[in-house]
Length: 293
Image 1 (cartoon, rainbow, N blue to C red):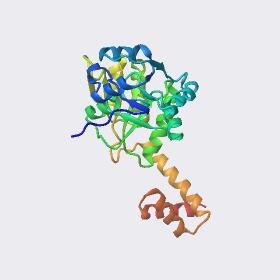
Image 2 (image 1 turned 30 degrees about the vertical axis):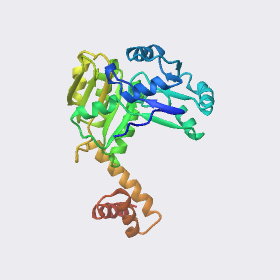
Image 3 (image 1 turned 90 degrees about the vertical axis):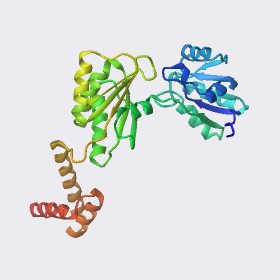
C-alpha cells in the first residue's frame, strides 16, 4: 500500500493526543516535523509534545483572544507557499478549540487546507458510552451560567419534540459537572448517560447511569481531569406531561392559523403533513376548535 503524501504548501490541521503522548500518529509526526511553523493554543503544551517526539519547530500562538488579529499575517505566509500546521492543546483542531476563523479565511481565498486525523475525546467517549453511536450531536461546552445553560437545553428539548433523536456529546468543566447533569435531568428528562474522564490517561474512567444518578454521584465529589458527557436520545414514547401539553398547544396554534386561511379539509391536510400526526387525530382536534370559534 502506498504511503499518504507528506504535507505540501498550505495549512494542515493535525489531531494531537488527548492525554497519552504516545498516541501521536506517524503522519502527524511527519507533518509537524516538516511544517514551517506550528500554530498552537498554548506554546508550553505543544512544546512538551514536540519535545517528547524529538521535533523542533517554530511555534506561533493562535487562540481565542488573538485569532482574528493573527489571520491576515498567517494568510500572507500561506499565499507565499509556506507549509503551516495547526494544532490544539489536545484532540482534533476546531472542535471547541480555536482555528475556525483561520480555516474559513483560508478556504475563502482558495488556499490549500488539509488535515491529519487522529484523537478526539468526543468520539472516544461516544464509543465507550454504551449509548447509540449514531446519529449524534456534538455540543461543545454549554453556557457556564445555570440560567443560560437551561435555556440552551430547552432549545434542544424543543428540537427533540420536533423529531430530533440523537445521542448528545458535550464537554464540561469538572466543578460544573454535577450542576450540568442536574439541569440535563430536569430539562431533558431521565435518560441514560455516561461521564468519561481522563481518557487515554492512567486514571481513565467511564461512569454510566441515569442523569439523576450521575448528578447525585458527582454532587458528593467533583471529578478531576478533562470530562466528556454523553447523553442518550429520548426513549420512544417517553414524552413528559409537559411535552404533551406543549405538543397540544403547538397543534392548536398550527390549526388555528390554517383554519383562518383554508377550509377545514385543507387545513387538516396541511397540518397533518407538517406535524406528521395522524390525519384522524388532527381532524378530530380541528372539529373541536371549529366548534369553539
